[in-house]
Image (cartoon, rainbow over all chains, first blue to last red; front, top):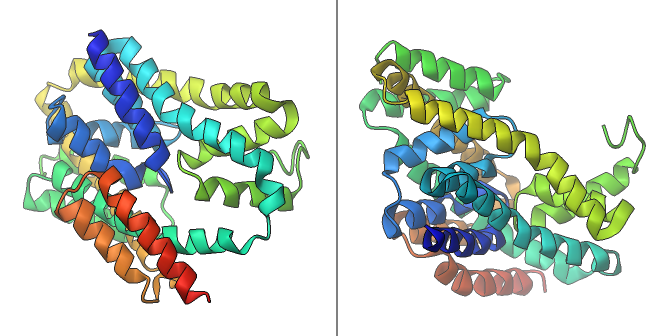
Length: 174
Length: 147
């Protein structure tokens, strides 16, 4: 039990420092650790917990809370959430102290220009993997595609799209 | 709320904090809480802000998780969840497409986006290993381009 807590703490603290641009960029790594390395759950369960975190208010990073809870109960939820928030928060705290001094530094823009393409590639990798994990049927893939098109083409609130997805599921089509 | 209602900080300060928080790793919204908390009450303020931000969502997501574990086995619920998971994946796909369509990527630097997709998404390299090589290479390329 406590061994699992240590694994959660170590894995998710590292993830915290890699998560430039939010949880989606570390989705592939999260999936790799949770499903492939530790075998804590199936790929489908992973996709379901992620969907639950998206449907819930608050940051999507809460998926780690659910993973921690699933693996080690309430203690796991607390450890996982703290692990994913603390390292990046401490870094932000430190940087925000000295930030003013570097406001106009040219290297800042260079670092940003270098990181943006990587972030985008990781986001695409994350969306690819979560689609594979979530969809087990052709209609599942169609539903994912239609939802993505609705986000890009309309101004519908994401929660409505999730609810619509739930209805399609209820109808037994996916 | 912070800028308009309470006037804790100006719109300019807000934007500046936001741009900082987007470059740093970690959930952006948590970083934002740290920045703003720090500004007013130092480390304690940051801690209070993060706690305030996370506590309610933490409890809500656990309740949802508990309900799901309890009832998720029922055929109806699991059918609904297959639909929700597919739609949730669609939200992420849309986010990826939106990012990929950004004008900043219309340069040779896009090759690094491709490398990240192939390396981490298809080849499934561990993220740490990939970033150890890719970040220096990508930043070096950005520096070379901006000479």
